[in-house]
Image (cartoon, rainbow, N blue to C red; front, side):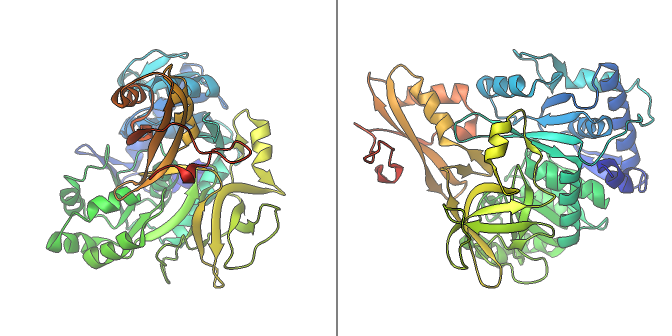
Length: 479
């Protein structure tokens, strides 16, 4: 089976049911089926075939859904790009993925053709409405999600139809998502959280979804009260913002809700408790990765334990190993190794990186965790110095390399610092060889890096602390 067999439960089985609300328009599942069929025919006419890549650089919109479904139907590999990325990051992905084209709302300098989304949508209206016939399998790649590497170079995680499908089936079952739900989705579709969880749970269950271009805390309360969702996927930053909603309004939002889910970054126990008191719901925290989709989840029925990411999902095998790859007992820290149908097919055109990420068929996550005797897992850090800020992954080395490219900088170190809103943010320490205003360094970062990667503070130091082997000791940097 492929994703379309799962999606057809809604696209054809519920074709007359209201499916999607976006920007004051409502679409039925049948309309989405025909729209994406027309786009699929257009992509085929433009030469795209099974296995080709199509990059998409768009904010949340119906056209992005059309493009994704069209790619799934043709076997074209969908490659979403973070809309916050700048030329430096874009060029790497467009060169590495080697796509046939990139679809965007505005033109820009690109090593591949840039197709205007509005023109594409207009041309698609003249295409046939029937679905093109393409034979695919469960191992067919459906998407490539780029996730930063510790060396700063993004790697593309290849995700198959089976990967996407097993994740959706798991979540529908474990979180009891049905066509009776109303999903409010405010997360960006270029991220695995919204694409792999939100979009697929919606299409597989046949529930009604309201898609927002972005989350806006100023209008969040009004949006909740008007749409009255039963299901909401968020990141900790969003839940911190929702705590600004007070009293009767918070209780009214909670009254129609069934389930709040949090992921992409650790949720503090304080936010969980404050949210439960104000909205009357205990947020369900889970744990996933771009390479693995969802791995663990607190139970829908049962204890949702503060600070814990819960229990392994069906089909997911977990090992906690020490640095010698030996199992660690309950209560001791080990690196999470995962195996199951959710694990990606490998890194795009990076066989060595793929081999390095696997041990005895298990994927090495780089995340450290502790297991309790009753089976709950708690994340307690990362083997790498990955920073997760507002749900976005930031690898310090990428920022350090950029800073060290500047003529005035000898070396740089970037570390995480706690932040109530975003969980943690990057802070930079630089050793200078020529005078430069720190505000100038910040501006250069803003011009070349995604906004969430720009250090929130810059500090000058005479030298970076190192151990006897010359390795930088980031924990010794001044607070």
